[in-house]
Image (cartoon, rainbow, N blue to C red; front, side):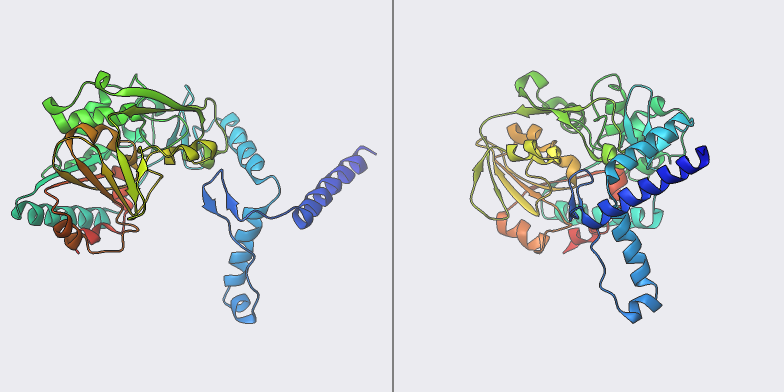
Length: 360
């Protein structure tokens, strides 16, 4: 009798999930994962025979399975109960940090990217410009004592390969502040405070004390990318702004708007995009302060870093090579830019395939 009850319950659950899968609306975008979900593939005998249809159909089912986020979180909790220290490519620490794993790097691509930067530096300085290069280590290196034994690569060794062109030692500066809130607990980015210490490392004696900026708490309920991977969290993150002056910004040559903080994102899952409206191809900031023009070539780590550059430049031209469609050299000449900063997080730089565009 007990066996029949178990079998009936199991069948009832399968029937319920099947009905949900058939009749519940299918989302096309996941706010939690900040990505577009797989769509139902179009059937053809050719795609069936070559395996594409089966693979794409499996991705569609996985992406649209009922209560998918709940199942991901449940899987993570079970793995932690089994004694694992990681789940979904994320380390889970005793004090609630979800730290993105960095277990391998494409050394060939990394060395190529470093060479592109060297060539860009040589060309830019040859024309009289001032050049800086920053690689920011991720939490997996800086907060490694929280993780304990891990399978991650040595980011210190990767940084040593770039020592001839790096302008500052971010690793040492950040490592001196590991007891502070320098990386988010549920996201792979550094916090604004972490970015400030990176700014101190770069600017040295020219850096303003943090008291020279006006601090504002933008959000206290941020759940970021590592939460999306693991499906669990222990404490929501706080997003801080450090404001200076009254800058204006235009995105992609469109109309100017006041301030570098797009507060509309505070109502969305992707709250980190409050900084500079996320990863735009081109953002031009007019700071209202004295100083030259700066070209900032970057990934998303620079989005919260740029607020600390306000006192030092009159204009900051922020370019994301992944989506910038114009010639970089032509843009530099057109805008008469005399200062350049290339800033990436180390993991992202080791995987980035657009760095070659520095030379065009």
